[in-house]
Amino acid sequence: MTLALGDLVVVVGTDDDQLATTLAPWVTTNPDIDQSVVDFSAQLHPPPPVHRSGPRLIPVVHHGTVVLARSTDIDELRTALLRVLGSLTADVPEGCVRLTGVPLLSDGAIELASLQTAAEGSRTLRRRGYEPMYSGSVIIDSVALTVNIPPSLGSSASPTVAPLRAWWSDLPNAEPPWPFAQVVAMTTPRIIAMAPDRSLTSSQLAALVALMEYLPPRPSTDVV
Amino acid sequence: MTSPAHPASLATVVGRADVAWALAGDQLVIHASVSTHVLDPTSAVLWQCLDGVSSLRDVFADIADAFAIPLDQVAADCMPAIESWVATGIAVDTTQPARQLVDDGEHGRTWRRLVDPPNT
Image 1 (cartoon, rainbow over the protein chains, first blue to last red):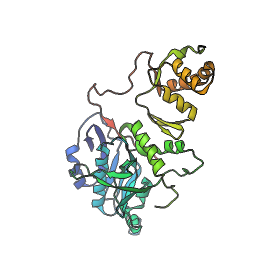
Image 2: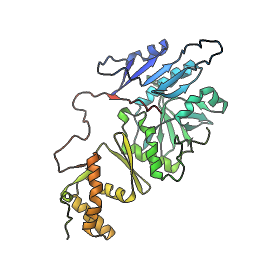
Image 3: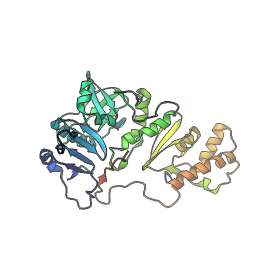
Image 4: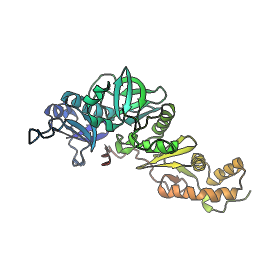
């Protein structure tokens, strides 16, 4: 289904009737949109294995080929997709930057893991003491060092705001001897991956620089 | 005053409005369309001098004064960088016929489209 979210249009595929009903108010039938490119997919009812001993697929939410959330709790994934869509429509204030990642709530603060962490599944993360708040991306105030997780699409709830305790790089070789500016440049895909038209403003870029100065990311080799 | 040899030094160049940039230490990160570049400290200074008001000759003169370098040398050193920026489209010559920098949104509603992440 094609959804019009403000001036943004996204194509969502799902096998879940409840989710389709929830998203129905945003469905548009613009013929100019190429529906063959699916931005997000929520496969909440994967087929069972052919053989009883075969591997079972875990329900998952994707952005393209990237896993945004994986869990056996289908309600958690419904919330995840709606939160992802809500995050897309949220404005990024001056001095803030939107970064992709998995916000992990722990002791009242957020640790932002790289998106690769989502593939591990929520059960693994909870076992480590984290409460994943799958949203695809978050808005970070790089001066106050707070994380803003926009509410789910269509929700009138206030955004979740919590201090940012740490965040992880998703670069395999981000440690020295890379120059600082080079690491900043290599981190920009985390801004544009969820940005309409892959756009990036100077304000967001400056906010990313400030964030990396005030709170440098932990190397990706550190396990969440 | 010695005039720079390059005739293009009379032009007024400015970074495109839709190009994002920020200082990162003494270097400068530029994001244009689908690619991100890092400018070394010298190029970073030059980029920041391109205000779209001063001609390149004035910019070169300021740099020559600031660093006590002959004006001709500044022009000779800086022009290749500026020409490459104009050629790649991250900077424009404002003395040339106007070209559209960004969509002003006045030509009807334009849909923005998320782009699939690379398959990596």
